Image 1 (cartoon, rainbow, N blue to C red):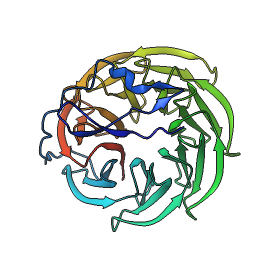
Image 2 (image 1 turned 30 degrees about the horizontal axis):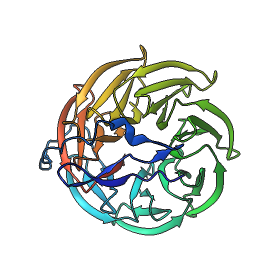
Image 3 (image 1 turned 90 degrees about the vertical axis):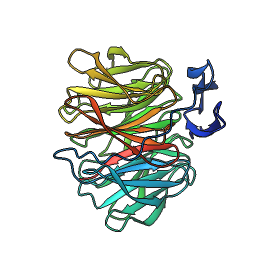
Length: 348
């Protein structure tokens, strides 16, 4: 089932990307049933704030521009804008930083970006409406959630060929791979489940509960739990990977779309569209311990990437990447990127 985020005109007549795919006949856009939010304030200029200890580059897909913004993680400045397929969504960077992999939702392919030259070197056909992508810890395989094909493509990064196609639930949106590489977890927005893939056999071996419409998923460092963002239920479910049951349900605000765990697994960061903020979950107490505002309603925090020194959040409505210091939970930079930024990934 098609799960492409499409542009729509807000009250100011501007075109903005929104998560308005229809799942099982119910519009996800009903989350904002009171009508589209007010037009966001003009995006701030790129910041030159330096984050100590940060390095490498950050990659942001701009869905309505068909581009990827490349940002210097030390200066928080855009250093390149690269054409990358049609309606690029998810992005992942190889462990050695050599290549970035970009899901072209509109072109049904994964573009491979050479990070040294900032040029696309090849495009690999996958399933219909690819969205979320995730690499195995060793970088050998890329897992691609194909929302229109109800499957996951497995791309061998040594050959840039698809070696397996794994049936999952309805309208898969995102993928998370365990730290040991043994399992991949797929959020199925249309069937309210999380598919568990055995990465050795490339088969779906189990289904976990995911709520009404799971769209984001993250796995704890020990592999014992997955955190699942349920956009319709306005909550994050904590699901035991061994028990297969929901251990906790954490209300986070209207429209959570993505969740990412910090390196130590003690905090989960949730992008929440409705109020325009990031909810920080204390994973020991299963409660929201802090809320970081990214802007007014209409900013639309969408996807999250976390390092030891920064939390990066795309603002789909505002056309920005927000950088948060995980120690102070203060916004330290706001970087203007392209139109309808969607995915974000950080390279070494």
